[in-house]
Image (cartoon, rainbow, N blue to C red):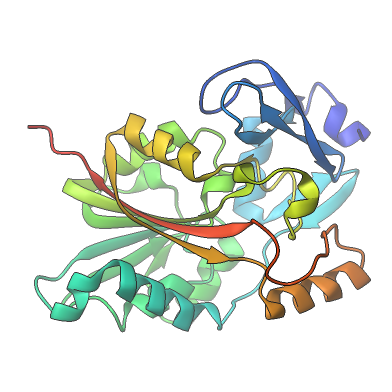
Length: 288
């Protein structure tokens, strides 16, 4: 492990974010950080991980310091995601196509606003779709394109919403259980959460996951049962789950290019990896 990752002043050992076990085993290493598998529940997580103040700084600026160099994770807008999200949301929220009452939707970690763009063509007329994004460059880009995205954290939100979406956010959150509690605080009664994440913890060895882990920007990798447990313990019932392949032909070609420029990807034949993208719709359990 590098000096940047191993210094006790910059990292801390943590128990499993789900079952709180202190027993884990090595699974992968990237950028001088170790991703381990919990021996209790099988969740994958970075251990030791950067301290909270370092994580917060990386989230705001989109830059993490690894091995004495800067890891830029800002990225750029992906236009191809907009029609994909439109298709997925239309399928998982079929009631939207029948019109009905408007909804208030908050996209947490809105990124470059691809989901918000897709919602404009899907939600009932009169709906309000807003986003929050702590990474300053991303939020500014959204606002330049006319999207209602604030630069803030969930704890700063005072309004109430019918749906809160977290797209590719799960892996960035050190304590997802506590994060779901925050989400409950901005939901209306029987409000819903819409999650997109991977199933990294459901697969076997690292070689079966085609993408870079992007440690330590990504801190946790779950699977279907891990997400179900997180949601159940937070008081949510799953409405529906949709799983999509990660290793289609376009994705494989893109990873070949990444490999050529030195990115830590694992190449394989298209349509053979067990890795999946999970979309999960869950509803806040009634108190009665």
